Image 1 (spheres, each protein chain N blue to C red):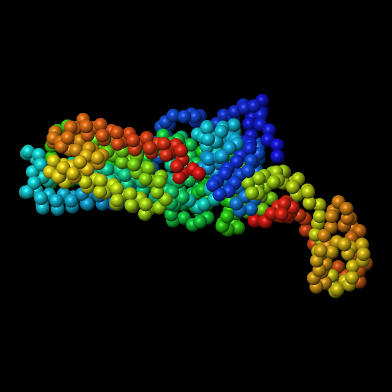
Image 2 (cartoon, chains in turn purple, red; image 1 turned 60 degrees about the horizontal axis):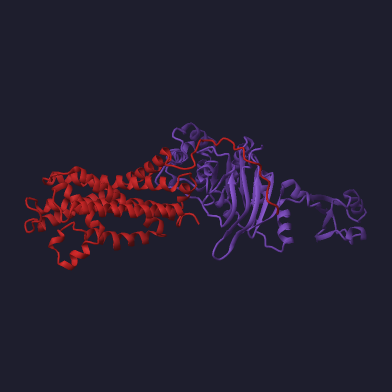
Length: 309
Length: 275
C-alpha cells in the first residue's frame, strides 16, 4: 500500500451567506511536490488554504493532510502542516526567540533551541533573536513568519503570498530557501500573484477561479499547450509591405520594426527568416519571445471569459 | 473533474506522536506560560495599577467611614472592606487578563498563531483560565500583603479563602474568554468592563453588609453572583458572613461552572475565531 498524499481534497465546498467560495474542489498533492495554487483575487485560494489549516470550517467535502482529516483529527493534521500567513501578524509582547520558543511549545516541543538557532541563521534572523517583534522591518517580520511555520519541522508547508511586498533581494533569498526545503523532501504549496515566482519554483500548477479548479497540470504541460512564439524584427529602415506568405503572421509594427506571431508547430522559423531577408531592408536585430506562465494563465482565464488578476 | 486518487492509508509516522484527543501538558503549559509572561511584561499596568487603586479605596473609605460603621462584632470597618476589595481586584483582573489577551490577539491578527497550532479548545480554556487565576491571585496577594502593614487582618479559614479565590478568579477568567471571543473591538471589552463587571462588583457588598440595605436592594444584591463570591471569601477571614457560606459556595461554584462551560463550548465551536 502506498502512503496517502500530502494533501487530499475531495468535493470541498465552502458557502458563505453571500457567496460560494469553493464549489467542489478535488485535488491531490503528492509528498515532495512544489505545488503552485494560482487564481485571481477572490478565486478561493485563501479559503482552500484556511480550510487545510483549520481556520475555516468547510461546508461539505473532505480535506486531509497525510490522511488526517483537518477537523476530526485536527491535532495530527496541524502537526503535519506549517503555514506562512499572508498578513504580517506578530505578537508585540515578545522577542523573536521567545516567540519561536512559544510556537515550538504549542506543537509539544520543549527543547527546540538548536533548530530555532538553525532557522534563525538560515533566515538571517540571528542578530535579531532578542529584538522585540514590534521593532522589526516588514521583511524581517516576513522571515519570522516563515520561521514560525517551520519551527515544528512540518512535512507540508503552505506559503500564502510569501513574497508580497518584499524587496527583490529578499525574494531571491526566500526562493532559494524554499527550493532547498522542498529538495529535502518537504511538500510546499505556494499561492502567489507573481506568476514568475510560480514558474520559477513550482513543478505543478492549479488554477482556481470562482471556487473551481479550472486547470491542474504539470507546469511544463501547461506551457507546452502554447506553441506560438513572438518574433520581433528590427530593420535599418522601413522594410515596406510584407510578402503574402508573412502578412498573415503580422501582429504589430513600429518604426522599422515588425512583430510576427508564429505557431511553432506549423511555421518554420527558417523559412520565415529567409522571406524576411528578401525584404528591401537589412535586419539589425531579432528577438524571440517564448510563452510563459502568465501567458498560459491569461489564456486559460481568457478562454473562460474571466478577468485576470 | 474526477475525484483525486487516494490509496488505502499506510500512514507515515508523524513527526511527533500527537494524541488525537486529551489534555497535553507541554502545549497547555506553553500557552499558560505565555499568558503569564504577557501580563508580567506589563506589570505596571496589570499588577501595580490595580494595587494602587485598591489602596486608594482602602484609605479613602476606611478613613471616611471607619469610625462610623461597624458590620461584624470585633471587626473594624477598614478590616471588613479589605477582603471585599481584594476579591473585587481578583475578579476584575482575572476578567481583564483573558479578555484583553484575546481581543488584542484578534485585533492585531496574531490569534492566527494559536489557531494554526494543534491546541484543542480544552487546552486553550485551561491555559488561559489558569493564567487569569494567577493574575488575580498575584494582585490579591499584593493587596493582602500591603494591607497587613496597615491593619490586623485574621485569616480564620484559609481553605475557604483559597476555594473562593479559585472559583471567583476561574469564573471571571472564563467570563473574560467569553467576552474576548464575542468582542470585535477594544471598545466592546471596555463596555463589558464598565457597564457589567464594575457595577456588579461594586454592588456585591464590598463596602457594606446586605443586611444594611433596604429590602428591595437586598433582593437585587442576592441575584448578583459576585455577592456570593465576596461574602464567602470574607467568611474565610472573619468566620462571619451575611448568608450561609455553603450557599455562597454553591452559587460561586455554579457561576464558575456555567461560565466555564459556555467558554469551552464557544472555543470548541470556533465562535468568531474559525469561520
